[in-house]
Amino acid sequence: MCYIWWSEMKNTFKDEGMLIFFIIVPLIYPLIYSWIYTNEVVREVPVAVIDMSHSKSSRTFIQHFDASPDVSVAYYCNNIAESQSLIGQQEAYGAIYIPADYEQRLGRGEQAHISIYCDMALMLTYKAIFITATNVSLELNSQLQAARSRNYTKRDAEITTAPIRIEAIRMFNATGGYGNALLPSVLLLILQQTLLLGIGLSAGTARETNPTGDLIPINSHYSGVFRIVLGKALCYLMLYAVTGTYIALCVPRLFGYTTLLYAPTDILGLMVPYLFACIFFGMFLSCLVRYRENTMLLVVFTSIPMLFLVGVSWPREAIPGYWQGVSWLIPSTFGIRGYLTLSSMGGTLQDIEPEYHALWLQTLVYFLLTCIVYRYQIFRARRHSTQL
View 1: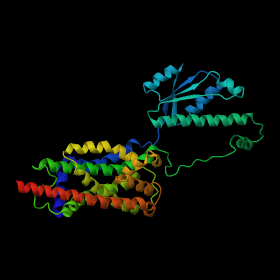
View 2: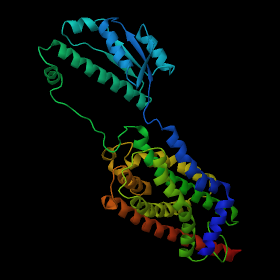
View 3: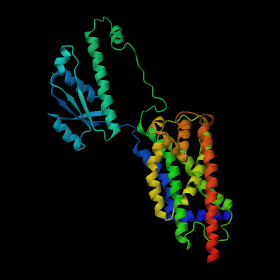
View 4: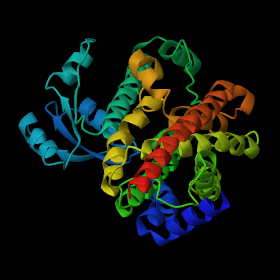
């Protein structure tokens, strides 16, 4: 087992591809992703305004809208066609249309209308424009109600405009940012996908360099299923014990992600079964790799579906039952859910017992499957050696 561990470690540092996916990518990718989303939310989204009213009321609405830090009134257009052209050229991401009878309707005590057109290609810009316009309209509605009421004090006006006071408190994502919501999930997915890539490259290299095309070379040292599987797994675990700690504990603090850790040891306790499950999952799938290039195709194709199946970017309850069953086969599903509960929600290992036990179950199942597949590979290698 020690010989196989040492041999796999040497191959890792001699192979440029494995070195990139095992060491360089896990160290650099989290920094790049986190740096891109450092701002958390979009600011000063350019918006076009079509003001057909040209009145004091419409100018008030535009001033309040432009005062928001999320949007910026960048263009004034004469008609909707001009704003459509700006949005099509990506110079503006939305448009506000104020009709000609806007002030007249307000003066007569009727309901006035303002139309909002948003580019739905990017949800963050759509959210900024729509929420800002909604908040401005609510604020102006309150001012109109207070001005027309017969209240004598400021407190009476407040009760008239807001009989029920609503206070919004963001749970677990205090900044309301995109990075806090999604990046912790991506960090743990990077661990799994780089492991799959590196282990797949190792398997593809073994098949390409072996004259018989088998995964196990014709070598006396490569005998005994448990020695082979545990020797390789020990190599990967040693590398990712450092990488996993760096990604799970260091990167979130470097970029100020919301962390409510009860004890960092709980996350380390979760990382042990998660890494084991990913390692044996990757070793089992690597038996399907015939050439080194196949690994890239497999991992790139499955990365986005694996992230969606976790239930972070899309509600878990809205995922069909069949696909939820598929997600239970993937270690990242339970690893990411447990990690978010521990780091972002201040939970403990007792709070993630289902995910924790599921990872250990995956470790056992994929370990046995890997042993079965490697036993078959050893049998093929011996058969080919007798033929030669």
